[in-house]
Image (cartoon, rainbow, N blue to C red; front, side, top):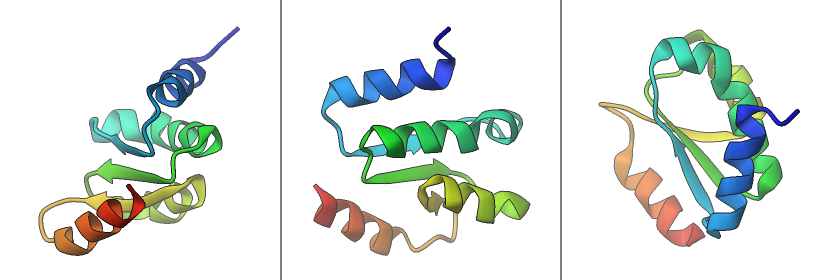
Length: 87
């Protein structure tokens, strides 16, 4: 049986996009962000962003493929430059 992350990864691959941004609540991130980031990177996402601060989950999210965390106070210019260079 195909899981939600598998369907999302297939849709991402079919889109032809190179970048992905996970946008959800902390509750959903806690249960799904690691698996979703892994699925996206395995499907070919060159960069996966997460909207929000990672907190204690930073290492597991980065290990799963999250490239950067988008939140107030982050280095937005650096993140945008890296995104631009990627595409």
